[in-house]
Each structure stands twice: as structure tokens, then as C-alpha cells.
Length: 247
Image (cartoon, rainbow, N blue to C red; front, side, top):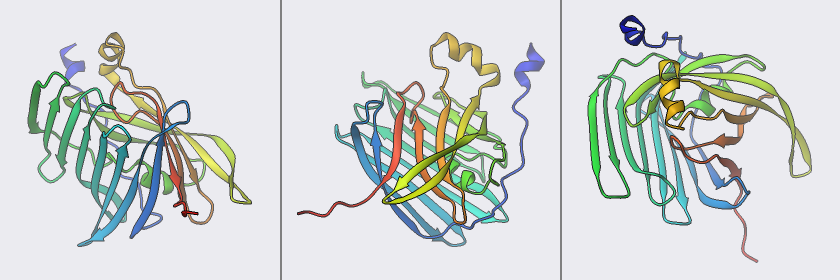
């Protein structure tokens, strides 16, 4: 048992860059399981000093906030450099503020419950080269069509733990963009908790499979994501949206 507990997940190779990232801005909306819009926001991406900074920010109707920022390099392979996640408000079980740095392995997790009790966790951890928090849509766009990949994520429970995330193709779906029909590749994202699975199941917090749809022809593009944004949270749907002009 001691030997098993000392063994972490096998570290994998980083994903190769097939399509370099650049300056991008997209508009997002977040819907609940009933299809009701509960948040709107932005996807923001900027090159800076040889690296890429990506931010997803969602503003909820109830005043809650989801703000996720990742900085990564793309010299032949994608490599996460730093990660920041802020979640707060009524839509989340706890307020969460997370920072993670690859260079030092340092992390800081601040959790504040609705009762006002606050807990701060700090330390260092070894990060595999294929840890891709906040980068799954980017990694997905760079897979060859129909291929399967397993990467790593840091799950904040709130103690940070490295887990595997299997990205498995699950067929294609016809979608309509205006009057044009396209094919989007459906991938199932399967988190593998390893030794965490039993205690997670006992606590009723085993994460469900997530789903992502990407157009893979010619120029890859993110289409839709379905899954929880927080541990134990409800399944929500993120999609691209377009500005609406006033009459």
C-alpha cells in the first residue's frame, strides 16, 4: 500500500505544435443544462515576449465570476508556463483563487467557503511536461483527425493533484453555420483519478466525462464544450456567440 501511494501518474510527452497560436478574440456564452444563458464573456489571446497568454473570463448574471488565465510557449511543443484561476460568487460552491508556476513548481490555493471560512494551501509540486490546465481546446486543435491522446491536468480538490485526462474521439456531428453545413469532431474527455477514485466516489465528487467539439478541417476551430467548471459543479455548456446589433 505504501508503495502504491508513493507512485504518481506516469509523465507523458508534450503535444506537438501543428498550428501556432496568435492574437485572437472571441465572444462566449455559458448555458445551463436547460439551455438558459447564465453567463457571457470573452476569449482573449495575445502573444507576449515569445509566449502566448490566453484568458477566458465569464460574467454571470448573478454576479459570479470565472476568470482563467494561462501562459504557454509553443516552440515545437506546447508547454504551460503559468496558470491562474479565479472563481467566486453564488454559482460556485466555494470561492477559489489558484496560482501555479512551472519554473518553480510553486502553487497557491485560497479557498473561501460561503460561511466566510478561508483556507490557504501553499507548496511545490513536480509538473509533467504535458500538464495543460486551461489549454485543452488548444491541444485538441493540434491533434491529427481521429487520434487519441492522454495528457495531464492539475485538479484542485482543493489540494492540487496531478491526474490523467484521456481525450478520446467519439465520432462527428453535423452543425449549421448560417446556411453552411460543417462537420465538428466530438471528443470525450475522461479524467482518470487513479488512487483518488475511491475517496472521490465516497464523497460523491467523481467528475463526469467532459465533451468538446472542434472543427478539424483545414483550419481547426473550437465549437463547444460541455462539463463542469468546478469540482462537483453542474454540467454547463460553453459556446461561441456573435454580437447582436440593436434595431
